[in-house]
Length: 309
Image 1 (tube, rainbow, N blue to C red):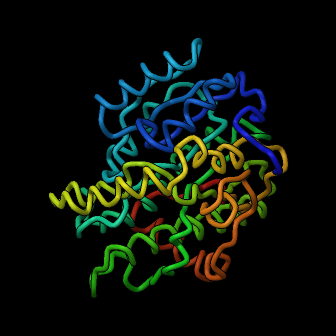
Image 2 (cartoon, rainbow, N blue to C red; image 1 turned 90 degrees about the horizontal axis):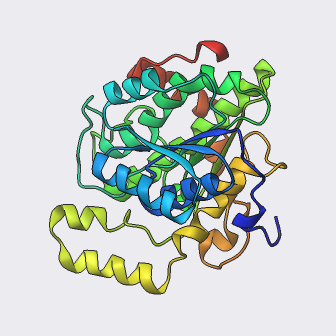
């Protein structure tokens, strides 16, 4: 991994990728670099205006890029099902579960789930399951990469209170959703390994990257001072989105990535450098917790992974 940069991404010609939340920040940087290396990239975004703008910007920055916007709202399972049903063609090589929300005031998804758990985990769980047949048809080299966070270290998943109805704490809810991302990857990798299937499930985290994720909640609540504080942190302390996207790109394309790998920047992103295998909380490697979360996720979303049952 030493010295690895976006220029080291292998040729992606002939491959198709879906990147959720690709209209800005890490998702945009990830989609653009995959397109630059020849992949056909679907920009799966909630906001049509921003999604189409991202499509135009990538074409301008990466001449010859094959990209298209497709609507996807991870806070609405009907939208997730529509995206999967409308996906063109039979081939899908890369699914990058990147989109997310952070530390929001208490909100519910269209299906009644706590917003952070619903978007960050359940929406991507459903999307992956619905697209699984296409990923399996792609054969060796296909991957699912789910973006977690070093913040997962602050909280595990309580299977008895997935929506934090007892006491909602926004940062604890975010940490739980990011632990859920890693538990999902752990169980998906286990099931793929057991079934002898070549699809690889890995995870990544960007460290502290300069995106609009942290300022979204203050902006939603009209707290200009908090929003400004986040902007200052992004400007003076955070990595660029381009550097923050490197672990995701490595997990998606590097030849040495294996089942359940977790890739991040050095020192949790507090120091610039090449992607490396990242430290993760022991609870994200719990087989029991992963199975419990998987069963609950199937029940809540109604999505079954028939090929991995």
